[in-house]
View (cartoon, rainbow, N blue to C red):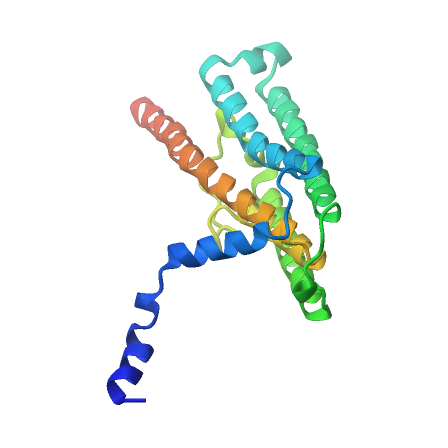
Length: 225
């Protein structure tokens, strides 16, 4: 190999990769193992997409109208109701995710001890991020209390928020990825990609809206001081 060819491969190789084609190849490869018309797969897709849509629509409706708070006589009770509904929906999503995996074939290349333990590590790490986020935020902080007017005094900066932005979402994604690897399931991997994409879209709506709620709080405090 000539020195010019070697230099090209070393320093410019990644720049010559068409990542869109690589992503398309991976998705096509996964779809070779997945029947997207299978009922449990369809149910998993619907629950993955529906859940964040549900809690964002309801929370924004509550923030504009306060109808849930009035119906329950308290913003805290209304938030507990929504949070409990979200928890039940997430249990349903996880059930549908698991059923979709077990109803479709495993991938032989993933069906080994190394992949299983990698999945176990990811699952454990995801659980740590999810639970530590919950304990740092509390129930109302986790389940959209700011939309009910239940605002924190200051932004939470303790673990895991000093390690990762939105650790609840990414911990949940790690849980699904780990679960998929432990089952050697290409269906699970494909559904995990969908989970991550849905969370990314949800954050595009949630983060600016939440920031605006706290901006309005700061403006009110400034006027009253």
